[in-house]
Length: 119
Picture 1 (cartoon, rainbow, N blue to C red):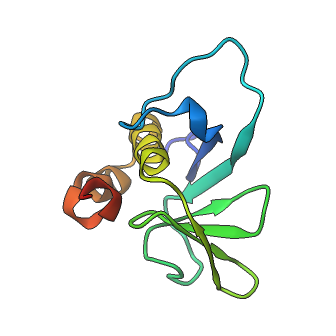
Picture 2: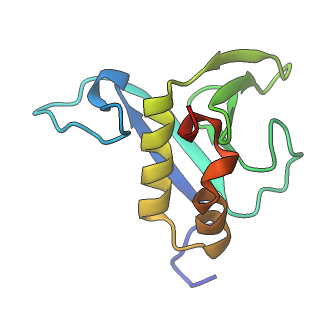
Picture 3: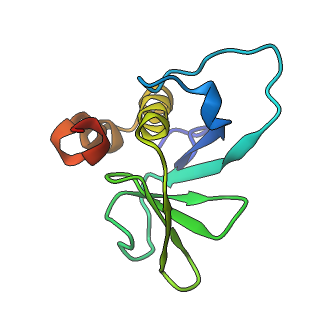
């Protein structure tokens, strides 16, 4: 890893109304709400719950299955809610735009694995 390169990617999710159906951010003058900052570790040492490719929410104890959009509680591993498909498309696009890590780019390029891309 290069000297200034982080071992994770952080993706702030805007208000869901600010994301179009294709997962693109619709620029407004002022962003008021935020739906958390999610972190994808390039080499995550915790268990594979909820999937071998997941994100951690930094402002709440939640984990996101990046294949399905399902969000789980970290404390009891129970399913909590599912992020909308358009939000997951935004998430995927932002992660790809920011990531230089080959493994993560390779995983995101396997579109058939992501249920929200196949609806």
